[in-house]
Structure formats: structure tokens, C-alpha cells
Length: 92
Image (cartoon, rainbow, N blue to C red; front, side, top):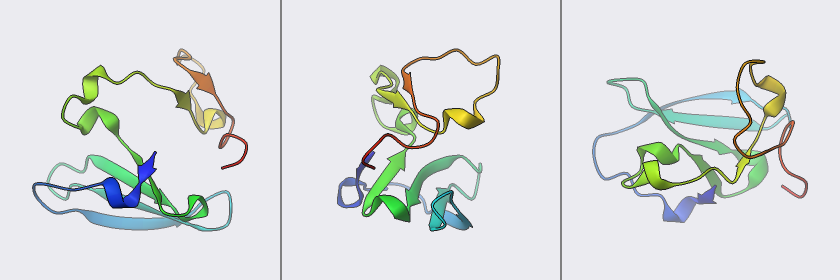
């Protein structure tokens, strides 16, 4: 997660759709309209922070996961790669 002010899209444009999250507040999902890759999500319950798909960032393949959120939706065959939270970590 990063502050929304730190995200800069340098090429192309995004499209978005919105759904209601577990908090009852909107979650805005931003994606590439050409390939439909999700780039980032704004869970309004978290304030002005974005959940970014780090693999899409320059050098992103070098990032190690610090936590997994929404582990409740994880498929049974997926391996745990970081501390897993059923929904969001406490205090978020």
C-alpha cells in the first residue's frame, strides 16, 4: 500500500469499476482498458492509500511480499508467502 499521492501512471490511461467492500464502503478498481490488467485498487475504508500490483512497477519483480490480505478468499492449493490476514491487518 502506498499513499495515493505517490502513484504516478506514466503511460496510457486507466478505466475503473466500483464495488462495495466488506466494510460497506466503495472499492474502486483501476485497470488497463487494452489488456484488462488491474493496476491498483482504492479501498476507501483505508483513506488515501492505494493497493498497488507491485509486479507492474519498474523493478517490481524484486519486491518481496510483506503480507497477504483477504486470505479468506485464498484458494486451498495456494502456498502462504507472507503473513496472511483473513481480511485487513488490525488497525487498517
